[in-house]
Length: 378
Ligand code: UFG
Image (cartoon, rainbow, N blue to C red; front, side, top):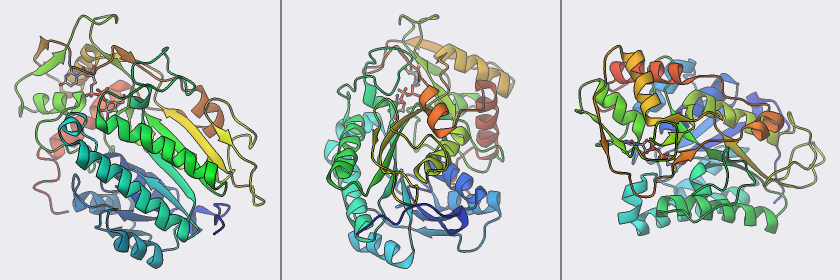
């Protein structure tokens, strides 16, 4: 079946957001709705809450069926079929997947099964409905130990150190092969650096289950007194202060990157010609929409150390944050930050918010929702 294409107004364009109740997914739904798109969420709520969907409605004022929610897993093929039967879906933004690095080492079967099978079911059902536009939530983890810094999209990919990372690498390959086998597809692989922060309303944010694995939610829980001190994993890296350096990006900036990717697919931004670095560019379709595989880093291009982050958060919360230096964490790289010129030149997108703002927004979310969504009903 031919690709329906995206050459129409956002108001007439329906986007399926898998994992749309999650951290990045919920923020992306807000930006899509703010830009006039219709949104259908499919989320199994295995690591998220329906409260996030209600909060997306509150933030955007969209109370009608411009936003629909289905509580289903992508592994349930009949349910995915139903979503496509009941909605005229034009493009997919695919976030749904398990994402805990450490857990994936202990549960490889669950991670491969869920993340790979879910995507295969999704793509199969989508193509049978003529929907062949997909934005995939990939990760800087595909670069592994990077060849050079800043990391550009041409940097060699390296073996991931855990099954979670492997699923990202494998799915990038699967989606690329999908295009190679059927040039009607248009695929965008967005490689995220480290998303943090929260919507400025304080209504949606990151809600990790149990003790957080990632730095920011951990720091936020120390700041609010739920955890005693931050464990800094290593101060002997070859970085300015010895602690690990990452490219932290505000989740709202990241969410806007997805709207830019849709504009790019629709031929509304970019040159329309073959692009550089990793992209496989096909001939644009008759209606001007793009075909191919686009690969973009989404980051700020700026590196911050663990101690930089702790200091910025201290400023946001107004008090000291205790920390202790620990040995390095296995699998961590010293420094990782993005070359951002490709996203800027092709997508017309750049991150707007700085570390100070990211910490302020995280802190607002944390103080307004000390237990995340757990005790909230709406
Ligand atoms: N860190 C600490 N203490 C903590 C947690 C983290 O010192 O309690 C340090 C880490 O060593 C690292 C930095 O803080 O230097 C950031 O660590 P995160 O766990 O927050 O993030 P990672 O960069 O390890 O991983 C993140 C995502 C992955 C994704 C990867 C892509 O969690 O999903 O970025 O680069 F694959």
